[in-house]
Image (cartoon, rainbow over all chains, first blue to last red; front, side, top):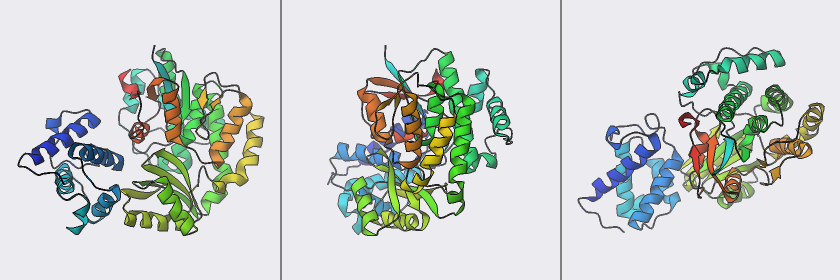
Amino acid sequence: MAKITDNTRNEVKEIVLDFFAEECEVDAEEISEDANIISDLDGDSLMFLELIEIFKKKYNLNIELKTIGKYAVKHPVKTIGELIDMQMLIIEHENNILDL
Amino acid sequence: MKKKAYIFPAFITEFTGKEISFLEDHNIDINTYLSNISESLAIELPTFSYEHEFYKEELNSQLIAYSFSCAFSDILKSKQIIPDYIAGYSMGIYASLYASGSIDFIQGAQIIFKAYNLVKALSDEGLHGMGAVVGLTYSELNELILKHNYALEIINTNNEHSLVLAGKKNDLKELLTIAKDLGALSAGDLTVNTPYHSRFLKQFAAPFRCFLDQLNISDSKLPLISTYDQKLVFKVSDVKLELVINLTESINWGRTMLKLIDLGVEEMYECGAGKDLKKISRFIHGNYKIKSVYNI
């Protein structure tokens, strides 16, 4: 499991915002944590999947996509802020996320 | 010089909202295309607007997607952005053949109209449908189909994580629920009643081929990548075969993209409204970019 530090959320937020900024061709500063991923940013599950792959590589995570899928069914993510929080949980708990 | 390809989407999931102004900037009125279709098919296509419910119905959605795709490829050609290859995703084959000079605009509309009307009896039963699953592998999904003996087929692989299904609606509904329970990131039905690219349409292959034989179809002036087996299609006989196969056999868009990449294509222009093909190009790795026509 990756070590969570005070700075981890900032790191995760920066990656998420940069990712959506590039996808949506806007500045990262224009994207708020309240932005709706689907209606405001035209996001989809493949974008979500790509983000997961980015975090898996960056933090060397041991987590199966299906585990994330099962978690997401019970805890659907709508906004950028919720997405950042979910990524934090994935980094912290990896495959144990379903035990939360 | 970098090799280029035009790629054509099937349907329009969502407009970008830039389509009409882009066409107007190039002195093109989409309604002229629609009027030509109306006249040739003896139907009445209303003036286009983004909100028009009419263009969300199955046949009309195909005709509007086809019209935009043809208009976009007309603009690219007028800008001397000439492709080395072309490929059409699913029903995008018709616009791709228009761009390749194999059929003219009206013939494309006639083929769409004929294919739709051939399969209409089956669609009208309301017993069939299509769905998409993201987050399970091909083998995982196929195992479920076999295990439960579902009347379903995986009819397209967009990429390693994104699969499309067609078949009996009740079985599809059950499978999508199971897929979600197993951890698919998304699993939902598509708003069509026709099981395109599947064995359920094989009964229409012969009459469709008969219709195609009545049309004056030409050789393709540009190599078309078959979405069925990724071979290069030029000859009129192969074009007709490809049109029939595209209706009745499974396709593989992911492999089609990889074929373009293997052929050295570095710039792919998405010829159509929306940006569906750019979206599903995730996880198709290679030295290429999907270029937006809006930035030409």
